[in-house]
Image (cartoon, rainbow, N blue to C red; front, top):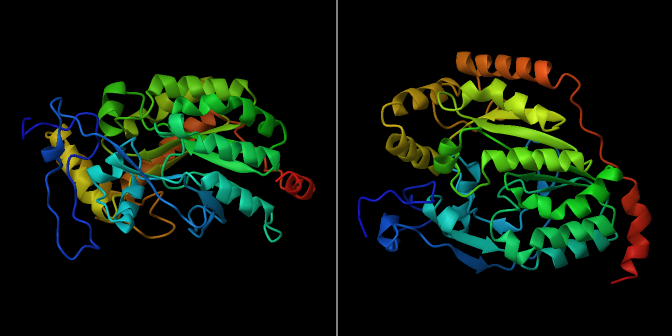
Length: 351
């Protein structure tokens, strides 16, 4: 083991202290490297009492979310969800992508919610925090089991993912799409594979995601592409090329956000960008600050997603122009909220 090794296959290269711990743990995660300079992933079962959570953020809008996993092996270096891992007793750094908490009871909890007399149809989002199609889903099939339930109840669902594993479930999603019960957002931040391998080390490649957009679209499933986040000085130059490519693959709409580095993510990202782009790190960090009132951290509703200042204005202008050129008639269908009540009572008799 080489103590100065770059941790292969991981985004974060440090483990930030957990702010809820009285004793600060500054353990170097490289102490756990194996002979190939790898960090192994642990999957830890947890047992929540509920699985459907209300979304209260005014930047996202009203609704509900389900996260079958806490932590995410994709390891995206900029991920805002890293901060939530501290609530579970872990670090937002390498722990976030190597200590994956798995909610095996999620389908049963969802069934109870859908059977509840008090539940009214409202779009549920998979996943607002961590990816519901991260690598372990291939074995657990928790997300697929929940989609099967949502289909049986004819209940609307939205999905956000950057993993091509979603294609496994096209058989369910295509049926839901015919009744306007599903929308899919594919996250794609860059077309540069070398950059993605460092920035999002365990996600699907850009080429695979483009093929996924195409395959979902051909199956009649409405797709939105999220260039989220755009990182000033690193990925903003790709706006036109990326929107052109996803439009050719059949996406109906596209949206973006500007990276914000709240909490521990600021330290984790700064460490990463210095190690990967030493000659450009200051420029990248300063442009991010320029988009958020002079700071890497921005928690202000209304501006935290879109940013402010000259760089934010230029990014918005470019993105608006790209949408106008390549997606002039972009529109997603409205969710069908009526079918759930019709299927609810008959479905209860089956369980």
